[in-house]
Length: 221
Ligand code: MG
Image 1 (cartoon, rainbow, N blue to C red):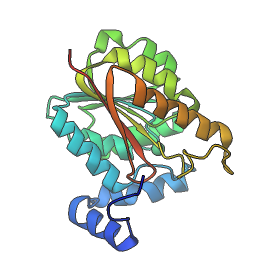
Image 2: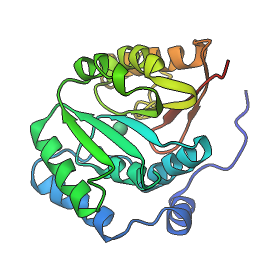
Image 3: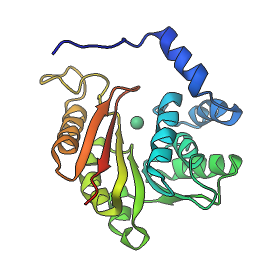
């Protein structure tokens, strides 16, 4: 296939973020503070946050699930797209990350909507049935576990809801059969993308935004 379309450049990226996805003071200052406290800078980018909000509004998301809070950056973007009585449950294994996310959610005035749960995602997912159905699941935690997360969230997300996996491009190496980078990381994302692309319950596409977001809609009926 010949690639069509407009390649992303720094200038185009700046235009998109400036026009559609500006951070407020809280979102702008959160990463540096988290970095000072030892958190790796692997949070989503602003245009991804806005893309999540667009998708959430399109799907009428009232109850969302996040797997991997980090320090709450994506959590806050998503929670801001919820209605006042909406709910976001964010799962996070690292106690420092749980603490930072809780602090940031409080600073954002979203403590009513957001609940951060500490524990291994696969353990917590197994016991979420009583709180299902969810309208959206955003996967951004352990890549080796993405396929297992997908098996769980396919049970928890309603028809018409969204399942979204971050880092689906694997640093741009997802297509490589003999990658130079971390082989197991790339293999895990290839396996996840393959499942998203072929599972008959989903309509999906890898959207090349930032490090790639694989977006799937759970088919209705
Ligand atoms: Mg990510």
